[in-house]
Amino acid sequence: MTTRPLLGILGGMGPEAAVYFYQLILKKTAAKCDQDHIPTLNYQATFLPDRVEMINAGKNDEFLVELRCALATLYKANISCLAVPCNTVHYFLNQLRDEITLPFFHLIDGCIEHLVNQNIKSATLLSTIGTIQTRLYHEGAEKKGITLHVPDSDDQFQVSNAIKKIKGGQPAEDFATKLQLILERLAQTNGPNFILGCTELPLIFQQKNRPDNHDHLRLIDPMEAIAEQVCEHFKQAELTRKEIKA
Image 1 (cartoon, rainbow, N blue to C red):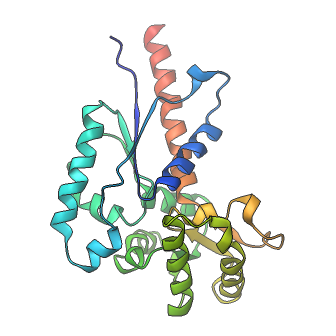
Image 2 (cartoon, one colour):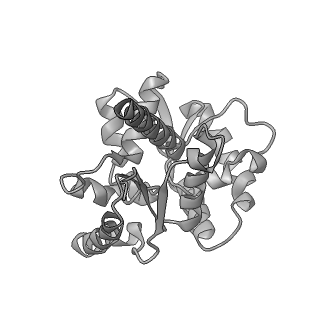
């Protein structure tokens, strides 16, 4: 049996965001037929506990046990690389970096790399409170000389509430207008760049959901950044395979 490269997606945090991430990969793949698409295993590990709650409760070791279990399922399927479309879980994944020996498309690192490539020096981070508290984006941004702003407590409550409600099944478009107003206000003081640092937020700001007056805002989706990295990785792997065959 031929061993083929296989992308493993560890999803379920939330499930709809993982589906959206895979859709990004589909759209960015230059495919003319089924066989041109990237072989992918999308594992919706919905049993993983709420990341923010586990961080706040100090249950780090308990979560790592569950996370290792989820990763083991993908390893047993012989994935050749890994992507995890959830921002806050990278707090725990960072603690397992030495254990992840496969190519790993790191969501936060990929976003910071995108900011550097686009010469973006300042941005506002929209995310869960857990992502903010653990400084997942701040540490990488500071090393690259990038200033990150965060919403005040009232605006953060609105962002967190939207994330929670979407995870609970409420349509993402219900929050488009309210969050658009927050972004408009924040842009006046913090500038036009916004990191959609929770994987539910791009669901809100898909083009079909957004009001008309958004052209001056720059929304940066970390999932889109690593989707491009995934496609480039498999493109290069295919070129290498063809060279070996030749």
